[in-house]
Image 1 (cartoon, rainbow, N blue to C red):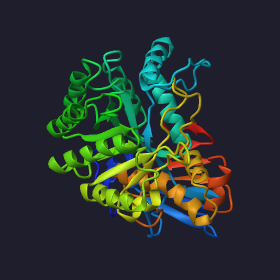
Image 2: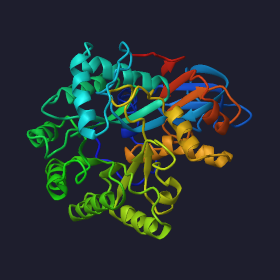
Image 3: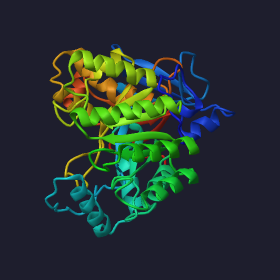
Image 4: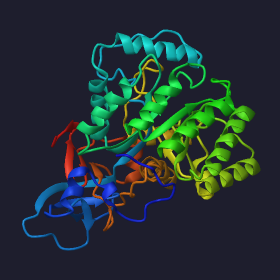
Length: 423
């Protein structure tokens, strides 16, 4: 999926919202499935969900349609991981003992050590993790891949290989991420340019222009210049806090406007936004919405999670992501976006049903908007992308995290009971 994502929601289903196989079939042969005895969003009583060529329909099922009995299970839209690092993962590898690290520079040094120590090829590790994400109910992800002289373009090639292998089940955007800095690590700029020129990436990244690279204008000029020349999007990691982070964020807004890149720019983490006074937050949110800039959070803690509800009121799209999964930065992470929605609800101190549902919607709909995908609301015209669980209702599912019995992508079953099917 080579995406120049729009910032606004997609009004209805499109071929881009369907896996490759379903999109091809939409041009000719009809493929129909009836998912019987299913409860969309926990509704009662169960209904039959008819899917033709990957799209939910209100029309009667065509003759000869396949029938799948869902046994009264709850169908929920599959989710979107708006921020994950599959190239760094040690998921499925022997246990890794991590060394002390505190600064970004120290963590990046540990990244290189782990990259060199792991014997399993990066493309195999990435595909293993990305496939696991599918089995937990992820339909799309934005994958940040380290670009630096220590790796050259190995990560882009490896995650690109995994993307191709899983294209029947998963949409993937690839971000060329300069984890080691754009300016402080010579040779990185040239690698970013090469990755964008090759067409292998969908976005170019950046990281803490002031706090890490110590070159606000120089870094952003390079990143936005590459995006403008090659027609790719931008997704910048911004861990900077307080006035430093706001200075970087304002500079990102200015460049987005100057280059008319609205709808193609995301800022991740954005630790300078939580805790802002109400009036300052409102002004900033209005500027972000006007510029067409989206944000992502990984819900790390109560004091660092973005004020999602307030941002949405101003029209700012916010996605939710896994971040790192069992890498040199942390032994934690599981690429399970339902679990990440659960964590978001926890750090937000969610108590009411509507608050729990909102956390799920951030993981499902917020990420879809970022990647320019149609929302999978399971109504007629929706892409038939859903997961099946046992439970009472959506809020209870967010709290209890039941087993994913089935995952459906474009009307095709792509996972059952934690295992990929239909490769």
